[in-house]
Image: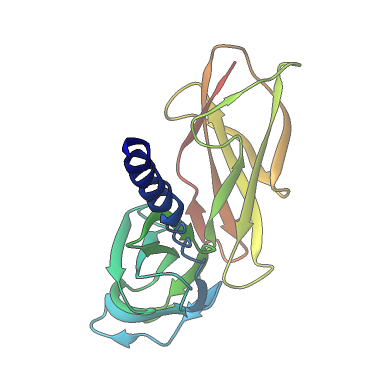
Length: 230
């Protein structure tokens, strides 16, 4: 009788363990697809508030498995970045006119800490009296900001990407480079988007930036970048 009583609790324990199911991991949010303002566009759809400000509507396609979005907006003249959150796939923001911006959207879910970042788009928020538009600040490609670089042969290549609202209007670039936090001009009127075989030394931090110039004499500043040679 005693052995039979022992069997019953063991069976109950096995049944309890066998009946337990693991909850599936939550699906991560999907990447949002941007729609407005269009990539590289002169924004003319905003509502004018004053001579210096207008409200601009942002829109993107709803992303799967997403509860909310962070819209990250950067003023490309001042490099000031702001973030606004919404549960909708649209958002209207008051912006400075005659100013280039970049933006992207981060998809978020309450069920997971995983997020998804959209592509980054740029546009120019138009304003009164503007006939030509300054080029977008050059995007530094390599070396990246704060990067540790291995230069086995003692040289590095400086690479960037230029763009403008009006295609084909970029004339050239001025490249500033050196060990000072305010480097002197290194190469002027560069028509390529790179300068190859720049001499560097191990253990030194270098600073550089690119000024973009268009055919109308307008310029833009990439902002200062730095890298260290191993």
